[in-house]
Length: 456
Picture 1 (tube, rainbow, N blue to C red):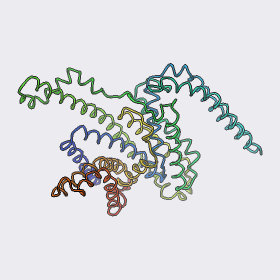
Picture 2 (picture 1 turned 60 degrees about the vertical axis):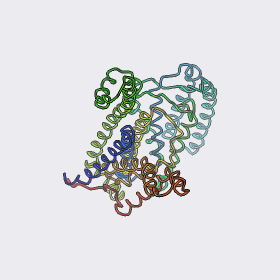
Picture 3 (picture 1 turned 135 degrees about the vertical axis):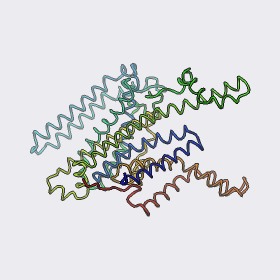
């Protein structure tokens, strides 16, 4: 128990902070922050597996997050029959052609390994394939995107349960990570970071501009959710009775029937939002706790010790007969799959898919700050970093506004400095995040909960 003393203290502080938000702001806001903290925790677990376990620098986190969100659309959204009739079969034919071209290139690469014109032939096959695919797909895409573009304009999905899309989101990210890993993992660490960042930009750019796939920047709204809708709860008699029972002491002070009904209606509306967020909190907690248990067992297993040995000294690990490339590829795929799962969770929580919000150059580094602040190589630290940085990111503006109003309370409301500071409160978020990171790096350079090697 003593070895987890710092963990208990750190997490207790975070829980208290979230409770304080509920008390002084609202429980709906507190639960929203908690849910996003849990989603951020899943992302940091994925990043920590890659960096903390194996020393791999992956700046493509937002790309895999977007793939997880795309999976939600492709799995849970109902298909659009008109769009499929307009060009769905042509796009399936294009997909088959892409697979055949890849298999043909793979066959030629193995069968004619020493043939001197092999590269030229493969290049011609690729060019011819692109021209043919473009010829088939262009009119199909144009027809699909013309089908009621204000509401649809895309193929839709499979209409399956949305929780299934969480698994598919992880598989999407894992599949793309496997292809990228095969190509990029041989690069030096700094080049790997650049390559993964650029690949993430490519993935996000494709999702944003291919309207037939997921409406592009027009967004997909009204996604399914694994929790009830607020409006349904507000019209359910059992829920109304439950809220009335919990708030009976407050409702008894009303003076008239109309006042009683209006106050009850407001309580029901507030409670429905809290109830839905609690449902998401339960689901997200199951995912985070499951991942924590699995990653902890993996970290202190022989496989985990092998990965840390490779991280600390690749040459020595290679001399001991370890396949460095194979292990790096495995850890790269596993970490990316977890990030893809987090992306699916985030879109499910939001209820909409907005490709324009995935900005690799900005949010990738927020995730990395979470891992660094929490403690690289420590699963508890990575999760704590996700909680701490996201909480600070969301609450920095309210905290700044409170401090500004407190420190300038002696000044008149029309004072130019006071007005300027109040209007600038939202931008203090970057200042507070920067100061917090500097303090952590100065006094806890290995993170709030640094990695600890447990001898077994």
